[in-house]
Length: 287
Image (tube, rainbow, N blue to C red; front, top):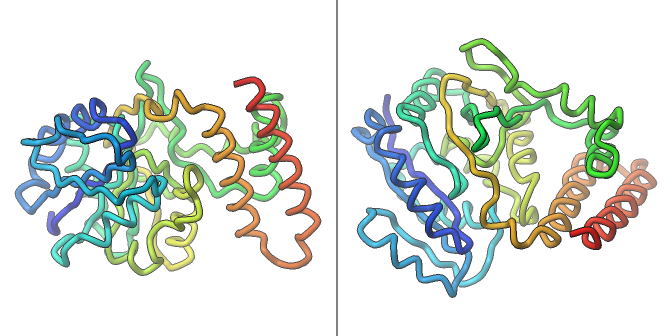
């Protein structure tokens, strides 16, 4: 198991969550730490001093503005030294199970063409979160994005949910189209080769887009069911649900428009923009 790992998390008034996340790391990374493990927190809330992080060993970076999730990770990645070969991207409200980071590293270092691996993610009630999926098609992705909240049983959402790779009962790594950005271990060389996250995705879909570009660059995307983390689920965004819903729909449109950019898809892109825009308005009124 070789190569220094840098854990990068992003805080937006999430100090307590960051502390819990960092406290879970030593038991999760006993072997990894011997090769080198750096802790990096990007503070997207400039008015939050994060004073409780003093003494944790974490480097706190303050860009002076809210860069969004992917933009903040890019900001951190640009500061890392050449000795860092792996970037462990994690939400602040993730807690690592013992041995989980070591297990991710064991799988990731097994083949140089592996670009990113992700763990089994459990919700705080113990259920498994669908953190690994096939890439969404135009129909399933658009249908799910527009209709899943108002018509959960729609056929496009059913097709989207059937693409869940995290439902596996086996222990072998499973190839996936994309992995949840709540926790993913990315090969630094692969991350740099595709220019990191697309900063235009302020929140949501930045993980889908990154995994797709890694796959197109020839790297493998693997779900590792033998490594487990617990994700409390968006504690920094719960009080901003209307804004986050708008961000989700914007990112859904951006991803699908980016993937289906050819001129003959213009009518589809227009329909997507209108449909997701209306969905955002309805969602904001209900929030």
